[in-house]
Structure formats: C-alpha cells, structure tokens
Length: 278
Image 1 (cartoon, rainbow, N blue to C red):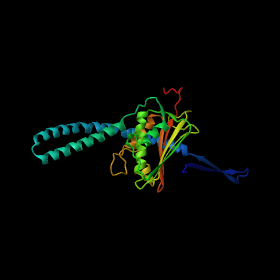
Image 2: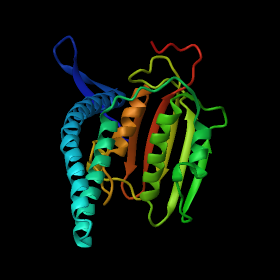
Image 3: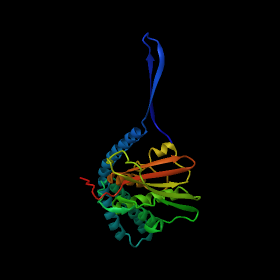
C-alpha cells in the first residue's frame, strides 16, 4: 500500500556541545494527503460544473434554432430523397449534441439526495440480476462478497442507481477478454475521516475488475468531466457519480495496479434513525 510520510531529523547534543545522537521523527501523512487531494478535486469539479452549466445553456439555444430550421427544410425537400437524408443527418447530429448537453447539465446540477433507508446488498443484487439492462458476459465471473450483517445506508435509491450501474458497466468494459468482477460490502470498522464524517459509521462498497488496471497518469484524471479512454462515451459518468456520492456526505476513490486490477471504493453513511442532517 502506498503511503505518504514526513521525515524530520534533529541532532542531540551533550553539555559540551558534542553530538551524541539524532532524533528521527516519522509522521504518517497518508490520510491528510488523501483529504487534501479530495478537497482539491471537489473544488476543481465545482468550478468545472459552474463553467459547464453556462456553456451548455449558451449552446442549447442555437441548437434549438437549428432543429427548427431543419424541420422546416425537410418539408421543402420531401420530394428529393437524397436531400431528405441530409436533413435527417443534421437533425440526428443536433439530437446527439442535445443528449450530451443534458448529461453535462446533470453533472453541473447539485444533487439533493432525499433521506432514505437503502439496503445496499439488495440494490447490488438487483443490478447483477439484470436490472438497469446490465448484461454480464459469460467469460466474466461475478463474485459477491457481501457482509453478513444488514447493510442499510442513508442513501437516495434513485440517485445511487445512477452510480453503481456505471461502476459495474465500467468494470465489465475493462475486461473484454473476460476476468473476475468482485463486489464487496462491509461496515467500516472505524468512522471514515473526511467531509461530513464526524462520528458516523460508514458502509464501504468496492467494485473490482481484473481488466489490466489504469496507468497512473489516467488514474489522476478519471473523475474529470470529458476524460475517457473509450472510443465512445462522454466521459461524464464518473464525474456525475462523484457529485452524487459527495452529496450523500460520502466519498468515492479509485486504486489501480497497472497490469492487474482496478478497484472503486464508495463510502456511504450508515442509516441512523437519530441522525439530524441539519
């Protein structure tokens, strides 16, 4: 496991000014470094979201005009099949851009999760059993390592159904030649330190694939909007997932060993009847 440490050294002197030794102090700064990186990522994504929302609204207005004029043009060229095809290409391009803008606005929007009791084990089981159109190829072995105790999180089920299908699909797509998909759930033995943690207990959900890992340069960018290593896709899935988990006062992180595996770890607060979010 990679960790960050601060090392300092101080000489020890005797009464005559001679050095009789050295004091070494080693401080584990791994958690502090992780929280600093999380804070920087949150600030970066917040700024990107504000900018993206402004750009999306500015683009959507002229797109509406293009769509309208393309519809009028189609009526004028109905007798010419070749020109009708060209108009259809224009409308298809506009509709595709509109879908991308809608996804971009979803990223920019601040999610407001409702306070619900969400059974995480049940949610993951439903996804693996075919809900949300997730299809696991036969050459991928699914391993469910769910904690035996009840995994009740304080989570908006509808919003979380945007996060975990995305993580599972990404894991499947990372293993085109087959492999193992591991889903784990467990109660965090100690409170997670970080934003919104306090003294609350957390549930850790881990999604691991054996798809060859992610290189270090890409790993630092995977939550950035529009960053993707796929031929198709907008690169907004993980950015949206990050915002949703952050809105739940949780965390999402990725660790990867290049050439071997990648794991996404989501921490969600446990359900607490007495907890007051205000």
